[in-house]
Image (cartoon, rainbow, N blue to C red; front, top):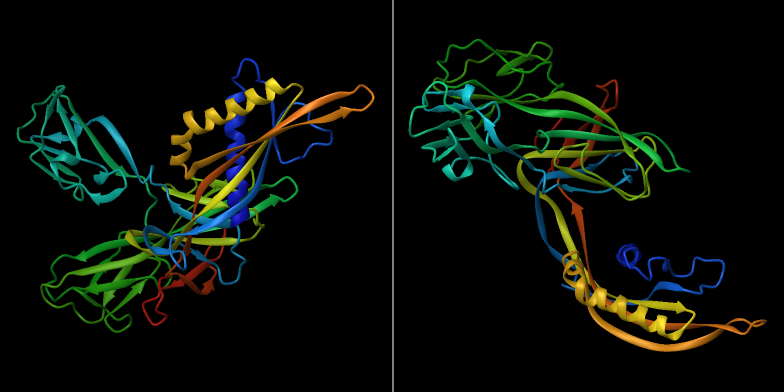
Length: 444
């Protein structure tokens, strides 16, 4: 953990200096080196080195609390599951904003009907239920809605719209992938060139209201999606789960449910089940330590260096945020030394001043926001060294030390483990997940 953070901070510092000096009219050709990877002695340039670090714990065991998330990362019991370092919500893309969509053809009287459910938006995936959650224009005049029901995809206006009127609405829709289990499998790759590809195979959750209010004489009902994944069906009668082969039977291919015991009068029957979704990909991993945020919408998948062909991971996407991980975090005070080389003392001094001014004044707030806070600057001495004994040429060396306070955060995934395996896909194996309590209901 320490070395990864040191290297990441060092490369961020080198990147910052390279970007600045590339625009400098005098020193645009200055080279920025990481330690001393060169074969010949540097005559003019800046060498970035790290010297030491001190740990600043935020608590005795670095534990900060529990993380609630829509996603939970799980490992495969029979695989290494080392390719993915972590998976997190993509907070900027959980929802998608639809700006001033023309809804004239979807408006009847004072009712606007949508094709998608409307959300509160931003990082909130709850259904819109307030008039402030949407914006409406009728003939370019802003209008405050009378009622918003995002779940039922409906907005009610305070006035009736005439035929030919232009109705525009700005609103949020879900971008996060549908709830379910997503399998991530590395399918091919070249370890020498580090060029890998992976597939995403989905097992999606579905929920149907089979009977809104039972009469007590119902014999059968049909699911809206089929075929269903084997043994994934759960039937709820009000708040009680029904027992398969005693209360009902199901044809998993046709989705037809036959009631063996008639439902109670006035009860509500809800079906929860899973169906196979699309297999997407292949998606490319072009480099080590690569973060992918398009394979599964609304999710960032961070791959490390231990990628291997055939490795599998599993990602559960929930309908609401649940406890997903324990968070541990702390800080390191890291000390970096910059050695500046040049053929004259004036250039050495100017490069040190330019570098310090840029980092300590102009870029400090931006680096602070990235968790790299510059807290101290110490100027070292200067020295003169002989470059060529034959000609007597010398070069000059100056040094400056920077102390940065950097943050680290690690999440330990919770709740999901793998119980067994069944073959149900021509692309990859499907896996059984269970909750933290082994005796609780299995999720297939």
